[in-house]
Structure formats: C-alpha cells, structure tokens
Image (cartoon, rainbow, N blue to C red; front, side, top):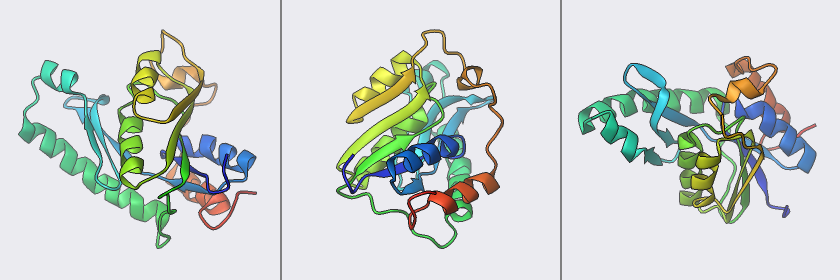
Length: 196
C-alpha cells in the first residue's frame, strides 16, 4: 500500500469490513454511496446501480429480458437518486469526501453477488481520477468477480463459491448495519483520522 492509499466502503454493509481493513492498514476511511436499481416487483434483483458522482451501470441483458423501457428505468433511478443524496447528507454531514484523485483506493463491500453496485462504484472512482482501484470483499460470485476484474486494477476476494445465492448465507451474523453504526465507524476511522 502506498502512503496515499485510502479505504472506501460501500454502505451500509461494507462499513464494518472496510473499518477493519482501514484500521489494519492505518489508512483513512471514507464512504461511497451506491444505490442498486432494483427490478420492478423484485427490488433485490439489480438491473443496475448508480453512485455518487453520477456513475450509472445497467445490466443490459437483464433489462432486455425483463422488457424494461427507458421510462421505467428513469422512474427507478429517480427514486434511488433521492435516496443516494439523502444518505450522502446523513453519512457525511458537512464533511467533504476524501480526495481520491491520484491515489490508490481500496473499495470494500461485505460481499459481491451481481457486482452491479461495485461496478458503479469502480466507475465513479475512475471518474474521480483514482490512480488505482482495488476491489475487496470477503465473498463473491466468480462470474461477477471476473467482470469486475476487467474494470478494476485488482480484485481481492477470500471466498468465491460457485453456489453463491446471497451474500448473507456466508456470514454467521448478517444483521443490517444501521445508519448510526455507519456514522460511528466513519467518525472513528474517517477522513481526518486513521482509525483507532
């Protein structure tokens, strides 16, 4: 890791994992808000994702197979864009994001299923001119990891089960990380600190 490296988490589930990574590396911790674009009637099925900074990723094959038109996608995106902006304000408060231009960014989530949210985050960080983007997660679907490897500079994933149905099945405790926990972890290992 170079001295300028930063750890960036995908909230909310990625924060506890990223906090430990940042603490272990002595690196600053920040958050990048990404919102999954869920299929109508199947919110957990990601047809794509949007991220802070305006990045947008769509799964074209899935969009076509579900016969989703542009107007439907625009409605889904508008709802998620409002939630993205709300979470940015909630998590950051008045604190600006870490400067990532010219730096190595270790982008962390609790797991990678479809990879849509992580892909949007990688693209957002590239738009912000990060010098290297390293994707890191404890568990991920091999196909999704392969797609991410084509976009990120490096992908680090401890478990790559071929039978991954959901990320939660690989955790003993997969209870939802709360907004308060996100703010607490960011305050302990946030942009002005290096963790405790």
